[in-house]
Image (cartoon, rainbow, N blue to C red; front, side, top):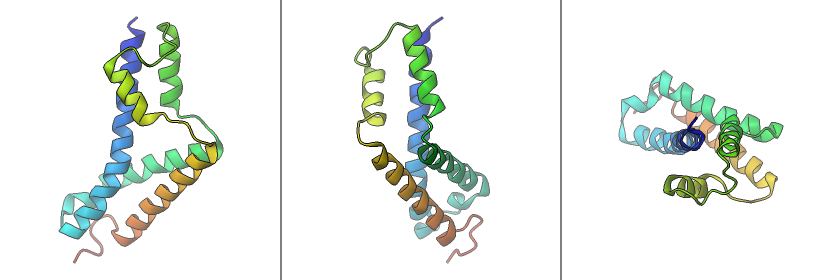
Length: 131
C-alpha cells in the first residue's frame, strides 16, 4: 500500500479545505462589495459555514482534526516520523502545522468563526441585502 502517497493526498486535501475556509471568507466579502452573485449561493455559503463550524467545534472540544489523525496514521505505517522527505510534504506541512499554545488556536478559530458569522449576517446567502 502506498501509505506515503495517501498521506500526501490527505495533506493536500487538508490544505485545500484551509484555503476554502480562509479564501472563502475573503471571496464572500470581496464578492459582495463587487457585486458577484455567485458568492451568495446557498450551497457555497452553507459549505463554508459548515467547514468553519467543524473547525471551531473541534477547537472548543479539544478534538484533533480527523484528517490530521488519518495522515499521521498513514505516515506511521509508511515508516515516516519526520516531514522533511518530500517537497509537497515539507511545504504543505509548514503551512498547516506550527506550534503555539492550544488557547491561541481556540481563540484564532473562534474569532475566524465570528468573522464568518458576521459575513453571513452582513451578506446573507441569496443576496438578501444586495445593493
